[in-house]
Length: 192
Image (cartoon, rainbow, N blue to C red; front, side, top):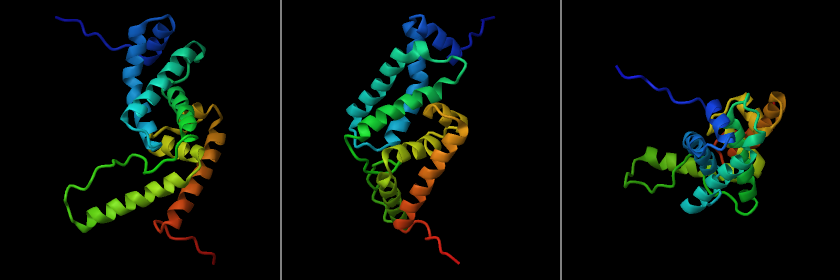
């Protein structure tokens, strides 16, 4: 009978990586790079594939430098996404986003179905609404609704309390709804 070997936990990997284990840091990268990539893509910073990969690498370079100060009793994912958020904000100062979070820039496959046309137009309008947000608001919307962070994880990523994270997210969501309404995707609120 063979012995089943379980994969080390993220906490164990952090402990090993802090001690200089390159394979442990590589395993951390393998586990979290897809999340960082998805978050950065969601920011739609007009980055080509190579620059997007550079941003992912920059996130993990910063993590490597900061890992020794990481509180291992906290989850690592929000910490890493928080670093990616700062990288995205720095990149956002240099470039404005062009399309919506989580949506692919794939051309239509020749389908002339009305539903496809409506979906494409809706996606374009959602992207424009997201692009109109300030960088910080856009990051919050993407962290919560694309990266699907919990409120605790969002608070950890922002290095603040849950009530503060919730207040910031509410403000960002309100601005996003306003931008959607400007584009006719949500009905304007009417006063009685």
